Image 1 (cartoon, rainbow, N blue to C red):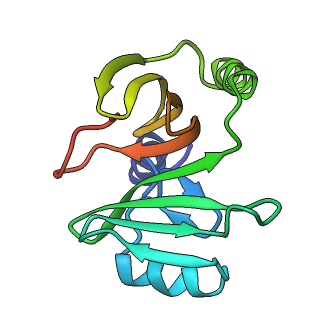
Image 2: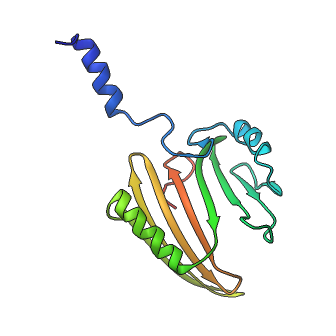
Length: 164
């Protein structure tokens, strides 16, 4: 029989969530902002734009094949959210949502949204699943300015409530 203390620590290690819940490439939940900024240098994006203290946008030129468009979201200088924009297609949205349902089970939260702004109507459907402490989402946004398909990974934090 194992030592009872070893057994307790083993069970605790299995029960506690990982320190780095989600990971996208070398970027992970809780990563310090300076480390994200340093890692982004090696990715050779066309443009990296800090958007205030809580966001970094990293983009390739839109006319470049396979153009990347990533959004890094921070709370207290720690990475808490990541979004990847992919080629907008409602068929892709349905395929991704189906794959996520197969992988993570039934959706935790669905967010339909419609509003009218000066440029015209904006319609969105976002679906989120939960995996441990993570919220994994897919969002399709349709507007007169163009459609967007976003994949997201988020965790709850002290700055905003996930999923959003």
